[in-house]
Image 1: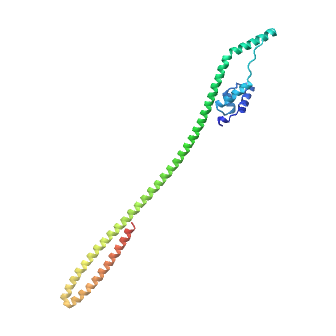
Image 2 (image 1 turned 45 degrees about the vertical axis):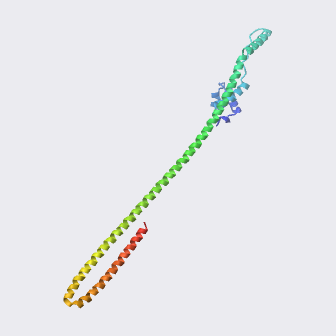
Image 3 (image 1 turned 60 degrees about the horizontal axis):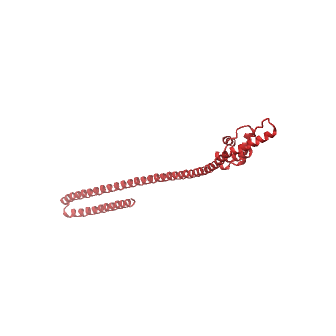
Length: 238
């Protein structure tokens, strides 16, 4: 419970209870009995309670004639009033100083509570910032993972394209070798046939061979065009 929640009635009840039990009525005793309250707030209410409930001590009356005793008591009272004038003035100044201290204590208490509120706000803001940083770090890790997977996929596609290019080059070289070998074979067969059956038969055979070679070349060109189309498709997927 905050110090400003302490009321005069609560302090007065605790002080009366302590007084009835024969215990010392002090600030610490009242705070202990209440279980809450700042020293400044308890002191302010306890001072008001003491002014109402603590009686000044009675002067002892000696065994003398009543007239002398009355005169003596009156003289003592006057002397005490004169002697305590300075004390009362000092007490009044002390009370004023105490009141100033109480006000300063209340101001410090209010400032402390304001600082506690500000501290709670800053801590809450730091917690929010920490959650935001964690979220951004998670997004960054996710983005890095996606980028890495994209690079790996691109590298795989590039390897596949390179493999197709290599395969096409090998097929082209093989086709050229086959055409060269078939041409050489045709030349040999042509020479042999010309020797065997004459020039006319050799010519007919040569034309047939040439037609066959043309068909093979057309087939080879078609295969090469098909391979080029596949390569263009793969390159378009990069």
